[in-house]
Image 1: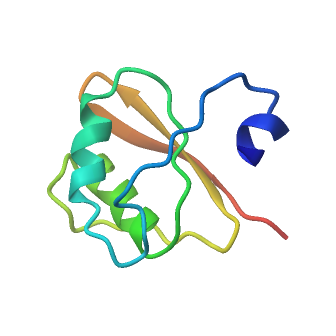
Image 2: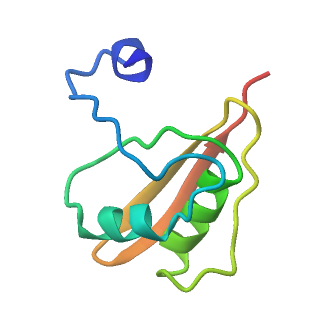
Length: 91
């Protein structure tokens, strides 16, 4: 909720299971692959780095992104392909 409020968005916040650090990110990756809207996902490491890697690698795994604490990463979706656009690190 703080993310949406801080960015001045009217987006609805939804809690979802499967975003804990030890959870398997495959389920969230499948849900995001089916989503057509722009979405912000908030979670913890190592889950988010693996999730981003799954999306960018097309669900085949292998790649992981190292998120710093309080980091933000933008992924862009073009059809079925996801690309890492940027990573912001807090100071």
